[in-house]
Image 1: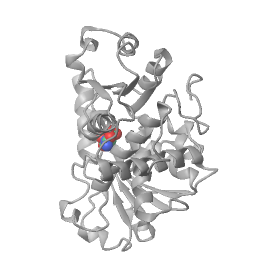
Image 2: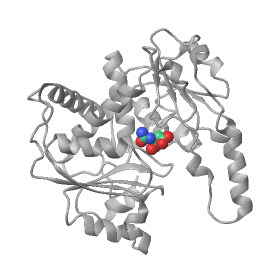
Image 3: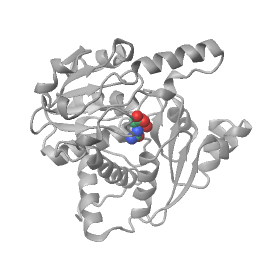
Length: 331
Ligand code: NCD
């Protein structure tokens, strides 16, 4: 973790949210409790004026639907104004401006900045120059801490308990940033984690080694090995955008072939879910491409649209906390 990124230590005020390594269990619990309070508030009143003196910037330089819109909705439901840019082509980055200069500009307008960017470490680079807190909304195939908090919030809402879970992650575990962040957070609660992927898309060894003291972990290419004993089946898409390196036609053809070979490695459908437990949670950070058959959308175990709801509540909670405000006492 870069030295300018601080551990949370139960105090979120003014801090950047860069990586799940900033969190211990107590910090995660604070976010989940605040998100619960936000859910209650939204259900009772729709919105609040908790942040109505603030401006929140959302800089999204990579494709996004849920993360972008949930940050927008989260800020607005708390009364903040939002300013946003989506896509490199409409920003000065396309003219050659550095990320650092962009951040120095945006911090003059906004009280917090959320950044999504295709490069690993970009959020940390932004945080290094920013006077206002920066939230990592996904940095390349690095981390996606707010999604992992979202995933845990959904699981806790369903099970009331997130200790000692048996979680199976399926798909592109190499490039999927959500699973990198989620594995780290789950390990804080003693989860056993199964990694199901083709060898080429395995969970990075650095993460496996890092959480080994806290979590039992098992790698396989075969979902059948582990599905029957799984509490949460977390499915991810093969990250096509990480397969297309720039430069050289041959490199591109090779990358496309590799993607085509791997893209349909696992399809979760009714047949597969017959082998899963009756109360297994079927999760996916979305977007799904071809990993979960739509015939499962009405299965009570399908939780991916609940995850979307959790995303807004968690981001409301985080925005409140890093601005030193909370509604947990009121709701
Ligand atoms: C994920 C992401 O962007 O990493 N989406 C999301 O934020 N909900 C997963 C993905 O794109 O596959």
